[in-house]
Length: 421
Length: 146
Image 1 (tube, rainbow over the protein chains, first blue to last red):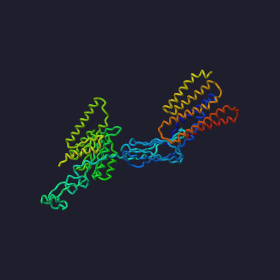
Image 2: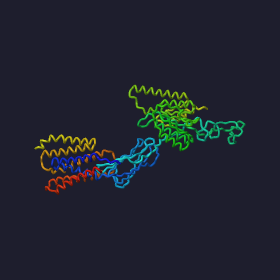
Image 3: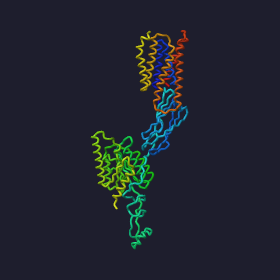
Image 4: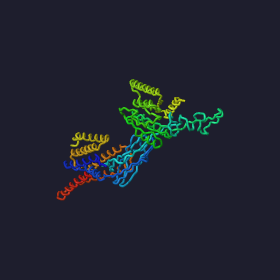
């Protein structure tokens, strides 16, 4: 810790010296009498001020939390030399809001250890660090101080809170492994598909006796097998609209985490592509481990502005397996992402676009020119949506006041209608 | 009589000192506070010089008042920081300040009292004075190095 002398102490020393000099010069005792209390204060500052020899340990009660949770940071202070007044300030990121005073003053006797608890509310998702701690130890009168920084910053992963989903967008094509998605193909399963005439090798328990009696020949039931699916979450990170209350990227990440959790719970394989200034990807996989990997990648994702051209060709081939359902989360703010998505559709991928509406985060038009520009911009977005519809891609706009489940239900309904019989 | 004549000359110093104290309280700053106290002390000494009177018995009170003025101003600046502090800290500081003021008053009064005592010229007093000067310089060096 570095030692500082209060400007007041310097001023007192100067006053004391000036009083003594003035006393000599004028041959009077009054200046010396004026100097005496200030000289005493300087002496008191020198005697009372001691290096506190502080040791600080900062700890969090857990490493992971969900948005809205309260995490307690514990600050353990030990002073070998003692500190009459110790000012403590824990540096916090914007994602965490203290529920109690974050700046405190305590007193520590020599050798005393004291623990301070600071409850922190997780306001926004992200991988954030709590600390270090700014310290200022002062003597009783505050004439001398020791300032420093201590405490190892603690990393806290705040996971996005999830939206409630009753159902997920079902993929058009499924994979070969067992899962919870009803496949369009026919085979062993639970869901009834059709009747057909008995063939050699069919099991006896598959015979539909009622239909066989009516037709005077053996007929068997056919079922849709339950298979898993490959789902790729495509996160557009080229641009975002942000305001104090949130932003499009924040909502897109929340939706991606919700979808990843939902699909993985259904035993599907889920992958992630962050398509923007930086390319990030995770190969599709299933299980809890993949959920943590996806959420950790989402926490690190950020909107990075870049002028570099990006195509889907830049992605490693295995990130987009054949017959995968691609769920794109985009605010439709950058043309490169829009082109890439159309490119994916042209390559035959089952594509669903969730447009994270940026309109709620825009400032209102100040004049008629602003209003006109806003209208033109909205028209261009309508035109883009029309292009997607022409390509057979369902586009649903997810507004802030609408739950994600409602937006996804809209997609499911449109796909049900468009699905071939 | 002379003090009355010099009053217009001393008044600006007193006003500036007061303004500096206000400035220190509004904007903070130990050096500004120091200048305010220095001006107040200078005006007091100037008024004594102008009056041409003998030793002023109220000098210890003035000195303690100036110190308290500076310390209370600093305390008021400290309370502006939004720190949640232990309840005992304010009491401790108050006690420390009271002790400092009492000690300062005693030291100042002792200085005035010693100056009034008749001193004989002699080798012992000279040696004592030299030792006191060396001690003061040594104390200054020790304080600076601490």
